[in-house]
Length: 180
Image (cartoon, rainbow, N blue to C red; front, side, top):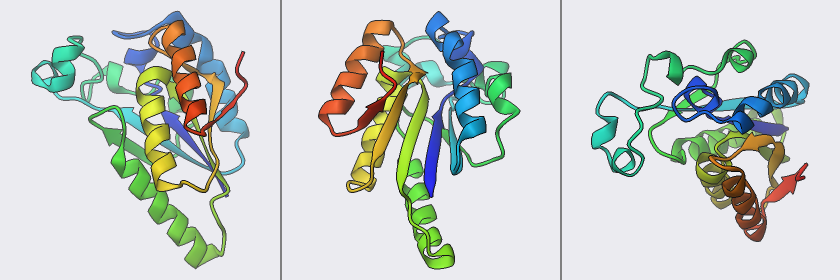
């Protein structure tokens, strides 16, 4: 069984408070990847409350974004229509819960269906913040499984940040596909 993790494809990261033209450009590719993926798909959603600016992250990045219940918090429409559940709300860059959930899913596959997790692929935004954080968490949870990042379906906070994050992930034995 292959797993796809779609990271933070939310309005605020696409065309909202922290949106970029690079993030907008990957939306069709991400939608296509989800549609054609032969395996289980999980989604993460960056989730903050009204007190975001008082948090450690908010002090370093003083831009209110992904406030629970707002339009900016929602998955972008092209991705939302494809989502069939399994959304993990996270209040920080990486999601330890994602690691535990996929570990439980792996155990259930083994026990119930006698299947194994073959690989975990990550796509989404931002390559240099949340994608890299979750890739590293999953590499720690699954050190002997291929952790893959599809670079063509990711966008960083800047193009340079995207490239740097891909280089760091390669160093940590995370496979990078479709890198230009």
